[in-house]
Image 1 (cartoon, one colour):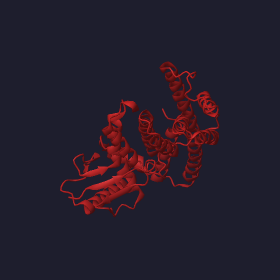
Image 2 (cartoon, rainbow, N blue to C red; image 1 turned 180 degrees about the vertical axis):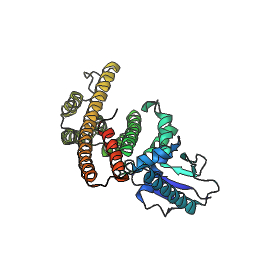
Image 3 (cartoon, one colour; image 1 turned 45 degrees about the vertical axis):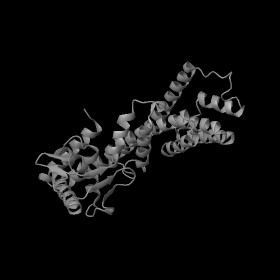
Length: 336
């Protein structure tokens, strides 16, 4: 029996023996598979899947489209893998991924490494744990399901990105602890590629460049930090970032008169973390406002169309269906 290899980081990829799985070109089939994989630890009701994927349709149509998508998905997987056990468990009420099925899934391995190291500091990692984190970081070939903008996907994408950045933080801390500054620079660059305005990472990269003897690169990194913060968040650097820049510029970084006591470092770290969290919340707030504005515009358009069609529709089942749609719009715009 062939092993199905599925990657959700970057573009969705489904492979068997290095060949793409055919018959899954329909976007809704891909969405259904991705959603089931992301929620593989819990079965999903047919009703919830139909509403999630085809919420704009009436219940009968949504359930029909779900049956068709499930049939396409199962047919494609069976044709590619020839499984002796079903890859999906499907009954009249529930749908779920078969936990015993031979599936290699990038996010599953990624999550396992994160869960086994999340309570450890970078300086406490074993060589085996560092290797596992490096392999997990390599799985992150891009943000989760790039190019997809469904609400459930955006939420999961954000969650996995934060897991990824946490893993990189541990590798960066380990690299600085073991004086492997080039390793630390590499993982800082990966972190900033994922989140260019992450001020904490800019500071760490400044430190690593300076510790590696490249003062010029450290100063240039500060300029990049200022530019990214202004471009993405519209804010100025934190005091801790300015202080580090002045220390490097005046060649006082690491001098005996600099307060490097554990208490001072902890306070600075907590202040830096708070600054990063606030910047991240500011970014999320901006995204949320834009999303809500788009939702309101769409609701207004739907209300206008429903009113127009209700006035034109004959007094039969079509008017009842339009009134049902109007109630759904009202529930969206005025949730309980």
